[in-house]
Length: 339
Ligand SMILES: [Zn+2]
Image 1 (cartoon, rainbow, N blue to C red):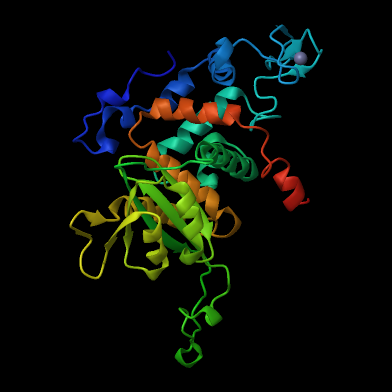
Image 2 (spheres, rainbow, N blue to C red; image 1 turned 180 degrees about the vertical axis):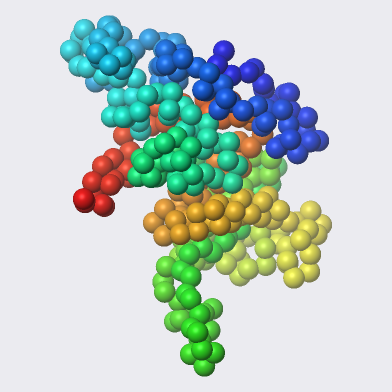
């Protein structure tokens, strides 16, 4: 087996998850011990789980393909049915990859080992990749994570969920001289780039984020993402006022207490503390066009924080391999950075 058999049951629940054995098991070390052939087998198994790693033609779905490896040893198959040539990654997020498969596995392990989120620059140093390659790779991993929460609905009868919002981006630098300074809380003095991440998170369950201009615009999305019969917890902000038309709502006034009569938004706050730490780590990237991707990454990390490192790596590799070619990042630098 390429990683230790450490399961959810092995985790001492009373212990902080970062101190537990599965979280500490450095699957990165195990990745580096793999031979190229073992990495190939591992990728083939997550790509074609239904045939236990035997190649399936990505064009016609045929099962009759033979090995026609490149002279440099890169794995390649040819379909006897439609004559198409394909690799383990053809048609996936890692299509037309340039690195050995082992490097991608290492990238996933490094990306996941860093609980706060991994900066592309640090990843490029760890793996001797160009910054561009590391940047695109990180975003492809976020895209794969997002795939898991597509259309997700949390809660249900007897379940409890929390809703909260956090503002990101749109920083306006205060003027040097006091007399030139403006009230940056007023809409008129903002730069329009400020966005709010809204999270719905089931207690002891899954979460799903989205990005809006204001919290108030999130109401119909919240309604669609929380199942009927769920008890919803929210803070005192007027943005959540309409929710009681659809759910039983418990409000917590943070001016008075963080938790009162079972009402709190601690699960949502925990999510935002993770996203804030990511923001600090990547401060110039978190806002703007990719805010949703960072929000989804934090959500994925929160939801899977108690499964072992090795299991997280296999799971993310599986998502990457089942996700189609990236609409966001295929040829990204060619489009954005002509040289
Ligand atoms: Zn074929």
